[in-house]
Image 1 (cartoon, rainbow, N blue to C red):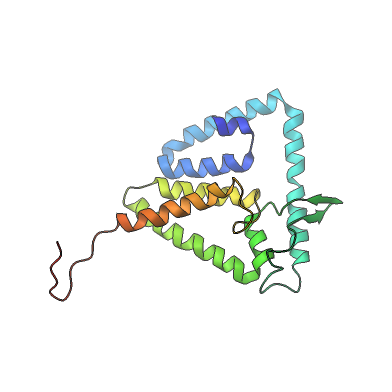
Image 2 (cartoon, helix red, strand yellow):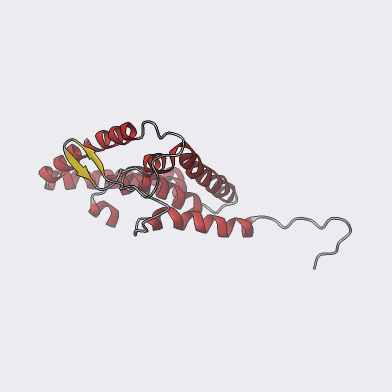
Length: 193
């Protein structure tokens, strides 16, 4: 309910994905209620919502400009020491509004591959734990992945409160994965206590 009141579309998408993981198909009812609540908020304040819909259109231009600025730096990117500001539509935006593209901008293809590698390992471990009945880890990871896709920039430098959405699920998955696995049998005649 609190996420609905924030009117953040990215957070709503992340919560919806997380609820589907946590509750399965039973979550569709809750997602439907959230959608109806969103429609009620739109009806109560249509000007604000139309402004939000119109400003979403800035993101594709920001992303296009980011890719244009990246020309000639595809392999290693432009580096983390350069300003993350993006010029688009005659405005200066403070960040890329997409951590995946920001990783490409700052670290190039190598940086993006490293980010995707981190997420792939975390997702595979979260999936293993999901199959073992521990659904929360996959839900948190999907929420974090959704949040960084539309409204964040740098994940490795300049810590901000939004880091929690990305790094906390990964840290929990990495810490919990080892404990969720069965102990290996002793080999070579060694006796285990």
